[in-house]
Length: 407
Image (cartoon, rainbow, N blue to C red; front, side, top):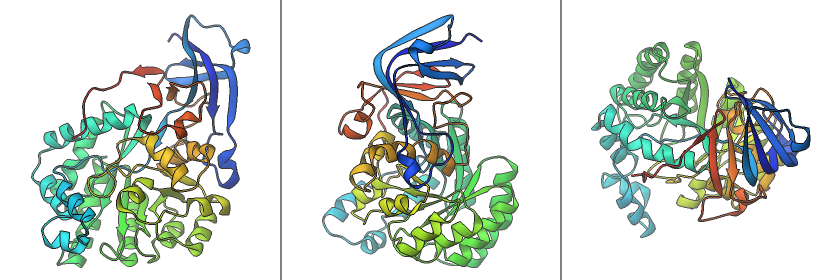
């Protein structure tokens, strides 16, 4: 295939490839007056324009900064219904328990999602994914989890598979909320029926469990994740969102790809993550929307952990449709530097998904990159209320912005 040389790059900015830990997260390569050679969807060469190889096709980007495509390692982009009444009630001081008693909360999303067809779920998710990609997300994880019944879980994953023809998606089976009765039977059926079927049909690349007081215990989580691992699925956890129950420690023990949320984590959990290969994924949109304490991202980086950032796009706790804004919020709310936030949203987010071929602009990597409106890459972390991303390139090809509005 014909190689394309991209020139007119004021700054070519990238972290080192692979997961970065601790202080290494702020060590970016910043090349001025740079160029990027792309061939067959991969980066063939990156360096200064004066040293660039010749190419039959040359494209001038106009003197703007270029960074790797962002990776969103935690979304719930497939759902039906809305939580607008919950939002209004919560800001008026109604407790979550009362919202649940009124029929709202996560179970209202589960009812609406269960009533939707695969085609309806895909149609609802498509503009959300467009919004994420327009904001700079070139790879997006999508979880199930809004179906207590297995049929709904499968429809959610099948909708994600359908959308995979348009977006770079990684589907995750999320075991999210237990039934009110028959927990032991439910866990057994998840392990003996749902997980084997999902793995056999290739509907998910990982399994995730919400380990929390109102969700699954540490023992139940272990049982589910061990079943997932036995069927060839990678493992992830939601943990320490409200309480420290031992979910972080379990994730580290099992070698999970990531453990996400961490708003309630303390020094013991920071130390466990710093000593493990598990990525700590923080979700600043939840802090902004629910007013929860921030995850201890600054302590995690200072302690030597590998930290990623995600949107947690969902209808209840983080209606955040922008990966770029998640990066900017990680700076303002979580105490990361702009360089650390870029690393957290690229190579470390890739590591949280078990991906090693993207997130850095180096030879051999996928040619997923962003052009900014600015000549200075730091505008990606600085700008609020406008999209600092001018162009999104996936596999070296420009993706035209969508005009769809997320529902």
